[in-house]
Length: 136
Image 1 (cartoon, rainbow, N blue to C red):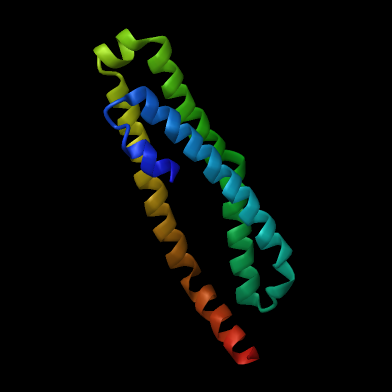
Image 2: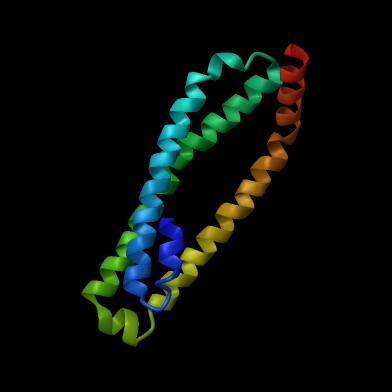
């Protein structure tokens, strides 16, 4: 919902970055919750493939919680602050476009990395699904 509202503010860079900072903070919170859920179910991962999947998920979640999401919040909030504090430089001289381009590149990188993770995890996910079906 926050991201949808942010998209309505594309014409106002300060509001767009402010809402994206709020969105990034909410995603950070979702990562924290998801990390707790994954750890709570760690005992369910028994086979070597399941353990490898759990290790990969845990490593990725930890990196997102520790580095990626804090960086996203700081970047979006920093761009918002710069636009508010230096409108002449950021808006009139067009430097907000550099911040928008960086935001876009980070987003594309995040999506590409997500696809890479799914390719790496595909075998483990299929193995886990087969294991669960065999247990039923």
